[in-house]
Length: 375
Image 1: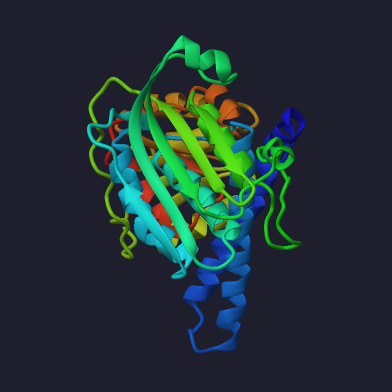
Image 2: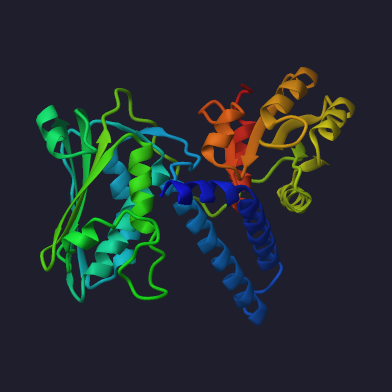
């Protein structure tokens, strides 16, 4: 399992750069083709395949606990409720989804997208375990784990936890299957019906957030996953803004773009130009510093890769800030969370855009960075 994690981390950077180029150019090509044309459907298929590939990479990194995350203080009930509509679409009309929220939940500290990943993976697994009609139940609650409980559950630890439970009345699992479910690429599904990464992803996310997970199942009796997430002492973060179809555009601000991958640099420059930004681009930190000297009073935002030859993105930003005191910064990276953290970027003070990303994701992050004080 550790070897698979290292493999995922090792290929993530180059793979994410390539996927970014495929996703980006597919999106821009779709904007230039009428939906009624046959080419439009072909481009949609390319984009769809690239997005599926992006999800597989994300699952591998989540399993390896190397996924770059942005934790927030969350109300778990609100997070689950925000996913219910999507989950009902995922499981289909033949399966009834019950939602039983607990009262007085403690806050948890997690990346909101990780809650979405856990729920989607568990509900899809539950759906596949149900032959025809059936039931899936999602529950939340609070629990205090003591030392006596820990003695009977190897991965448990004492403390206050928020409980997230997903159960079904499907086919259930025998003892042998139950012992393998969190192994990457293990699946009981037919060829082409599963990657074997769904439950290993859930396991990786829970462990990354210092929680633990128990599974109860018997053949013909269904399955229940019980996830314990540590209680967080703090205030709930403000509600996440709802998604919007309108992509934020620039007002002609000057952006200094720095990226050592030439094909990705070309793509990002074109995206930013189409978003109404004036773009200065550099293929190396030394070139970026020269551009910063020449255009010190114009540059509003630095968009830079994190890991580059000569110096990393954080060091480059600090050097350019001397020339441009009002500079804002957006970091990009296809590397794993541990590699980014080593460069001093992985915390809430910085705006980070994880590769691969779409044009709309870039637009939102650029706007966020422009509105944020430099740190």
